[in-house]
Length: 95
Figure (tube, rainbow, N blue to C red):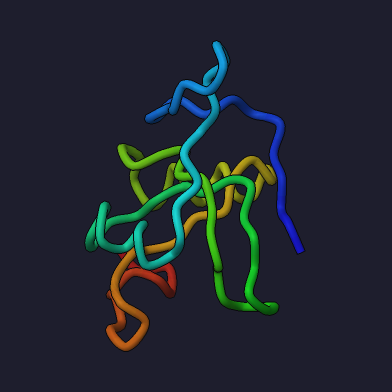
């Protein structure tokens, strides 16, 4: 299953044959590159119904609340990059 959005990506691009394409990262790479922070993801490929296989990171500079509003508008999927076995306070709606 792939979850796609129409909005342009504003982060790192790779140049391919004169065109710029967004960088796709695995979930582990996202966690390593952007540790312990909220990220806004687009073009998500899922391993199953609840685990991200890979995605394009669109936002790393937004607050949890900003990302949540974009997710409600179906622009991105927001998540925290803490490893799966660690619970981040605030994921249940607390600041």
